[in-house]
Amino acid sequence: MADGKRQKFQALRGMRDVLAPESARRRLLVDRFAQVASLAGYDEMTPPLVEDLDVFRRVGDATDVVTKEMYDFVDRDGSRIALRPEMTAGVVRAFVQHNPLVPWKVWYSGTNFRHERPQKGRYRMFDQLGVEVLGVDDPDLDVEVIALAADFFGNVGLNDVTLLVNSLGEQGDRQAYTEALRAYFESNIDGLSEASRETLKRNPLRVLDSKRGEDRALVAAAPNIDEFLSDAARGHFDRVLAGLDSLDIAYERTPRLVRGLDYYRRTTFEFTSGALDSAQNAVGGGGRYDGLSEAMGGSPTDGIGFALGVDRILLAADAEGAFPAPESSVDTFVVDMVDGTHALAITHELRRAGISSERRFGGGSVKAQMRSADRSGARFALIVGEDEVAEGTVTLRPMRGIASDGEQRRIPRHSIAGEIRGLMDSEHRGDQ
RNA sequence: GUGGCCGUAGCUCAGCCCGGUUAGAGCGCCAGGUUGUGGUCCUGGAUGUCGGGGGUUCAAAUCCCCUCGGUCACCCCA
Image (cartoon, rainbow, N blue to C red):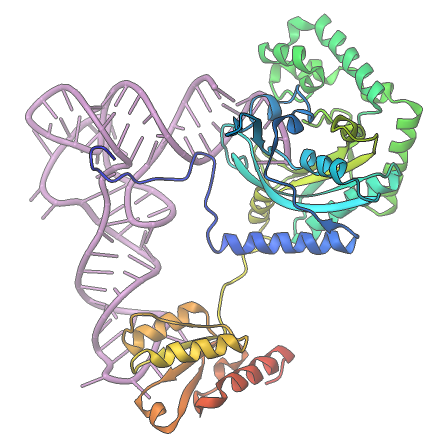
């Protein structure tokens, strides 16, 4: 800096570094999701982190995500681009661009950006896992998609999760309902909070989401979506509910559930965690968005999908004591009391043989090296001193695991990898 | 974006209200006890721009202002 004083930087607001062991836990969570999704026939896809600003605008201009929270900027060539605030828009844009065979079933994991005031469970940079399916109108698909998410939560060990479902009807139904709400709230405007009056101008549906006490009574008595569903929408929704019942997937029918993004039609759903007692208790949500493809310039195509919040899932897992971070450990730790050249050679050798191996740098007493070995979580310590070098051996000392009661012994220097491999295999089989 | 609360060693926190010797504790870390052996125990040790900047004062971690960050509610949503 100008004054010569050293500036200590820190991550930008709402953006966090993910260090071990959290980093390993996240990787594991994504792996789990990949498993569950691929079991159901979904392929991974990775849309760009940045898109033309208009791609995201198609998501809806009445949502804060698009109007107030986007990281948009002017590129060097003058075009307006933006960091993705969610994944669906990019996926649908990709669908329109590549015109793949339908049904197109994809899953994704990735980072999104939203310029909001950070809070626990709400960050400016956050990861989502999700799926999207394009080209299928069948209500059974809605069930498959919801079941996939529900199974994933179960797989991760989250038990205190509630599924909320609703139908917003066809586009016309949704519009009619919106108008009915507008009329209703306008005729009762005096009972509405200041903030909700503002919301009413932009998006009457959103008023249903108000958490202000003053609005509660009015919201409770508001028109119900059920009265506005067309026969087709009604029939579709009934099939979805019947499907959920048949799979024993518990749900709560919530006519007031209004999802944030404007593109939702018909089936909408949300998963909330009872373990998260904050206002940020939604761990995932999604629904049908028939019509988005057209908005992106493609032909009319049915679509459905969901996005799950990685940060919130992990927070909920913490609260439930589920899905702990995997312990990081190595198979072997080399203690070199000679000059370090043995540690260098042996770790290299073992790693090439597929056996993980660590060592301490900068030497240190045997005691210090052993302490490092212990901390590394290594199952075996390989100790090399003058004596071992002289007789062409290394000392193999069991540190933990099934083998930890065994005595340490010397093994030929040239058969270390084979010896370790054998021990780990027998341990894996549950032998002595 | 609006309002409230908080910010002291790597971590969890005491001290701040009622300014005043070298700013503390536990855990962790390092070393020694055991000159070739971890995890327990004992002994010793290191570590802080008291979030940052400015102000008041003889004197500020303690008071005031600004700012940055976290957190809670609203809002929004994953």
